[in-house]
Length: 147
Image (cartoon, rainbow, N blue to C red; front, side, top):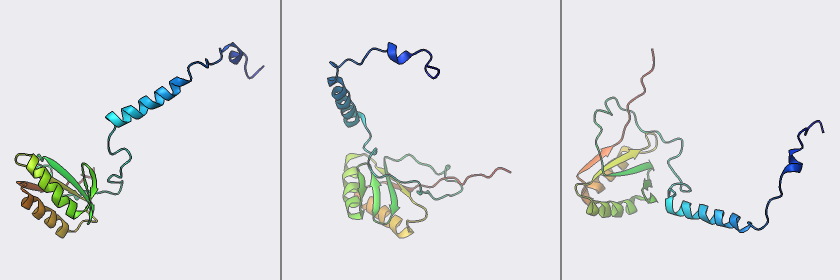
């Protein structure tokens, strides 16, 4: 009696047993909303926490608007809007995207520690062959340390 002085549990009404179907309706609505409005990246692999863009002074000054973005994690692992693809699939994706967009441009976000320059030049070459007018390799400004 000391631990429950108001005895609220005795004053509660029991849960109605006629509304058990609402549990399944709620579950179905949640699944429906995830299918209609959910992101395709919820359960897909992403960039990860160890993805680091290269740093370059003046990177913000050279920023440009692009129509397409790809992320290169390591040679052979490239992420586009539809998910992970390899280099041969990237060539086909670039051709399709260049055909759908007027004056397409490509932003390549490459992991600074794992992507050699030869991979970036191969991607740039494939993009220009597919019909892209501009290829931009992403970089970020170095963090300024406080004095």
